[in-house]
Length: 452
Image (cartoon, rainbow, N blue to C red; front, side, top):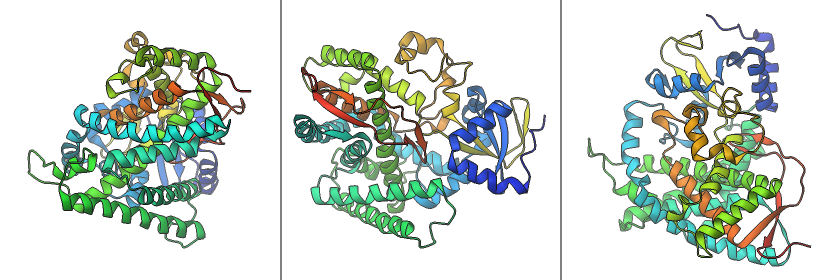
């Protein structure tokens, strides 16, 4: 069955502007109008949009070889981030990278990186103690970005030098801001020297300079520092004996650095928002942390014991999946949901909408961590939940990310209760990732006493 014909050329500009202004609302309207398989145009590209988890599973798992990452969004991301594991089209280049990088994310390596994470988290908590004592309100989004950036920088490549770290943090924050602004309204190419684009390229150069500096240090001393970069430098492909080139190392570090801190920061920000909006859930998390840790600092081994806290994180990622929209390109003709998919078509699929599909989720807009108890997860179709993707391209850093977030939550809530400055609802702002549309400010209340 052919899909409905997208609007003609006269509507291209209007569609593009509507999509850029409010992409979630635009996609919701398309899906509500046309169903689980829909079609629309962005510029000159015809897009097929999928919402049903089984249709997404077909693309990502059942026929993964027939869909690669040569779609329009991935072409754009390779221009910005290079050819890392998360951006290459697929094929042997991707398989070789995956074989080289997989050992770096084994449990033993994550355990070593967890020690780096905890050192950074504890240092940040000492700073928050002063803010808590003064009754200050903190803006969670920039605070989480700063924290997760330092966690990732320390765990990825043992960057501890204070001055370099501060310079790096300032540069990557500016890159994030300018890139996000451009992604919302990409009317002019980044090569056009507007004020914002100049800031982007100047600060990107600083990021690349520091990455090159750290790679050079690692290559020079050849010491295993217990970080990811050390492992990547030393690892050889078991089949070919190849190692990552300097350019590949830089591209891998660039994309993991950006994705590793931006996504974790957003999920933590949304977690604080939901715990503040649902004090009964926060109280249950506090009890679990107290019972399991008994006042001692958390470790990697404790993460598996914090089952309710993990359920909260899972529910937050259901509501606010950081890869809220993803894509592939069809390499051959296919059929999805009874509709013909021509070869060479860009396929968009929406985890944001799949996580709300009424066939799989009851009252999907409600925040209910109980959806992720072991019994509920066992009963539910596994394809309905994909915060880290699925199939061969399942995010390689998912264990790292979950460990980082659980350690931040457990360490923070051992010391403080969180109170929102405002109970006003906050909606997501969809850019490259899914952050809050306005600031989420909280007061850190030392455990055992109430705020005034």
